[in-house]
Amino acid sequence: MQPEQALYAPPAEAVLRADEMTLIQSVSAHGLVAHAVAVLVTAVAFVQAESLAHVGIWAAGLLAALALRFVLYLAYKRAGELLHADRHGRNIVVVSNLLIGLGWGWAGFWFFDGKHTASEITLIMAIAVAAASAQTISPTRETLAALLVPMLLPLIAKALVINVELYAAPALLALALLLTLWFSLSRYRAQTPRPDSPCLWRRE
Image (tube, rainbow, N blue to C red; front, side, top):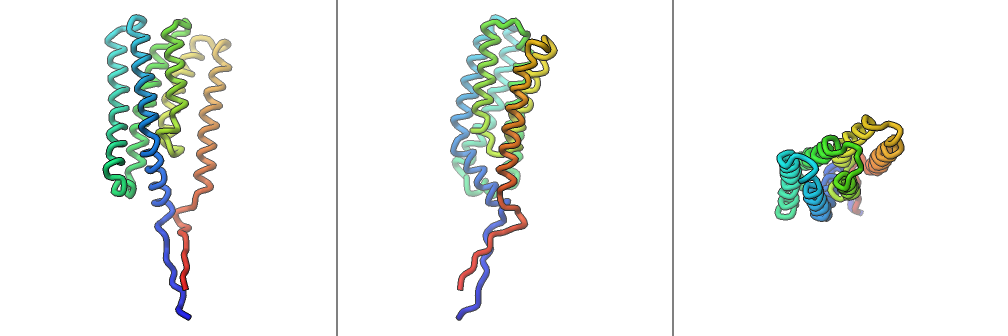
């Protein structure tokens, strides 16, 4: 009988990174399109309600952040095998999600004033669409938090400053959404193999 030979699979961390990047590649385009449409609709709604320069700067900045993420999407589409092994790939996604989240947070804080106008309702719906599509461009807890926290917290803070009694319940619901998504992905990460526990394959 031949002696057993142990073949070690790649570290679990590297496998997990590759799976995450594959997920980004497969669904990011749909999420980016949803965000871009929401930005354009919101900008049109606020053209007459806010300063044209302010709306233009906001829309241009957020579209630029989305364009940066689209470049990342194209990069993975063309050179996926190479970028899957890049340890900085996840950090790039986190930064791009952070920029997108800050753009929506900017709109939520500066454009929302509690008057319940048609433009404000459009803004709330646009942020809801962006939040609903967050997981399509956020395969990890870190990337999801980088997108949703700066997206929702400024709007929550502004609403509570305007009228605590009126907006307390929606604010709690938004915070519950953040906590639910955070802990659901945290639980998923906890169930994945640790990097120091490589898979062991045996053959005789």
